Image (cartoon, rainbow, N blue to C red; front, top):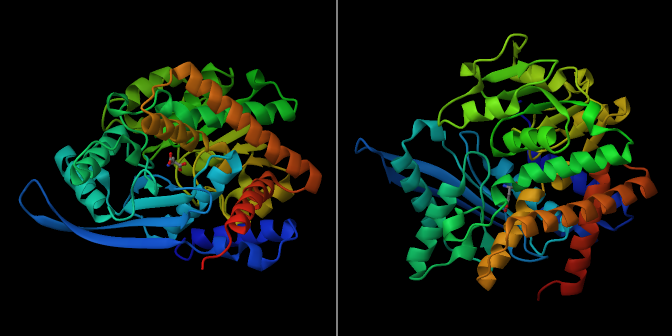
Length: 420
Ligand code: GLU
């Protein structure tokens, strides 16, 4: 939709939470605006000798609760309103789970499939140098997001370190393990999604073993979510999709087989040799297929006023950032669909990013069991907080999550006061 602006979603959700908490607008008005924005254009030499000028952003929404934190995405649709919204969601996400960070986000407007690995490295390094004044372990710490991964984080860490003249592992999280990455970070967002689903089902008195699940998106978050929801909860994944389309099998899909196929660079679901009984469906159909649980794990603006009424799932766990529009939220609420919001459900990634940063600052290495155990404890505590407010105030989980986050943000702002 051409006039869709995700930042409008953010502002209306913040206002709604502020009013719900009986706050005056002056208490939360700061959080309706991003704190600092940087737009950059930089030239990069291509393998054939030509030069392309590439556009990028780094937007810091808030540093009231600590250094800014948030990923960097590579996508052709990256724009300022999107990055602004993603930065604000990071602020609320970190507040809900109670880790000492504010929120930020970065984006580079490219289709990464159109570039060689060497070109992607040059784009990443030049973008890092362009946003250098903003980032650093004590002020703003990037991480992976859509179409970026540990390798890209390694280039960012190296570029920043070269500029400083010494190694600074804490400037970025989601790095390769050998240069200061944390065990468990690669799976952390998907693990958090699995924990959120497990805790919601517990509270709804439903046994995960009998339920069917559809997952939209097979990137890092979607694929790990599908894997852990089936292997650790015993639920049946019946539909998955990626940019090339989706597959559906009411008897359940072979998730390890699908993930092995997708693990080869460039492989998509359309070339997966599906066993008999598996139907090809469109990406849109994955959202409306007949399942108990829907996990949107792709991009924002997927569940909209156009398709919300057709959703059959009774529980949605938002693994992506901003997959549901405000209008769709209302329709889902009227239908009685239970929805675990992004700022809670996908917070596992940034929680383990926090562990990685702590390990880097202290030159310590945690084992994976410690990481997963602490992640579980933080997620369950946040889910408890959000459910408590949901029951007390009789509001949706999205509103209660924003209320939990906003209370902490306003408290921090009040304690710090307004400079000068
Ligand atoms: N990109 C992830 C998110 O949206 C992780 C951010 C981070 O670890 O800083 O939550």
